[in-house]
Length: 257
Picture 1 (cartoon, one colour):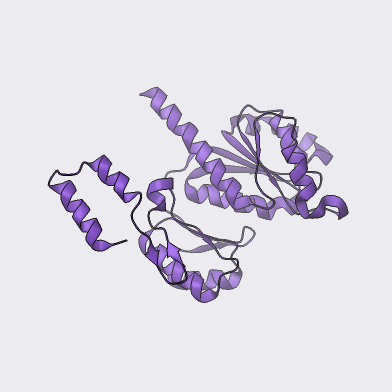
Picture 2: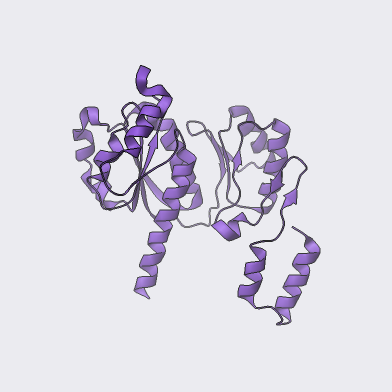
């Protein structure tokens, strides 16, 4: 961010030449921080409600260190996805509050003042799908959603799912993570009236084609209200589920006024 430009804007707000809503609109489009190898969007939290998230895959330790140091200086909460234990150790040296969630491969610094809202339910077909589900869970929680989990309840033993019907009906949005044939989101979608976010995983034998079979099954779901993420995209599912969840919470609050 350009300090001089920000100071001029705040001065104009103080003396009454710019209204607060007009200033906020300008802040949504202010410049980024140029690190040479990365352009950090410090205003993403203003536009989207959450700071920029680091995708660690494909970045060098030096790049991750530079990006993390800048983001942690300006923002809470913080997320770094697809992180190795080595990357987690690097980020922990920058901020001791950072926690590594190994199954999810996420490094997170939570905003402890943020109140968790609503109710997201994350479901897996099998235990092998849990790492992708955990990526969704941690993402939604750090962004501010209350999350419950229901793991290993796939269609090979459908009674395991039907025995938890109250959890299904209490949820405001459900993330369903499945590999193999990928049919579980259709089953869940036929049982509930809330949005279902389906996530295919690359788990499965032979003709699962590293998740392509599950992806195509989910795209062809016969149940209404099912949206589909890309293969293994737990982060995207968690982010979308959180946005749907808090949108519903805000609508309830407005209706009570």
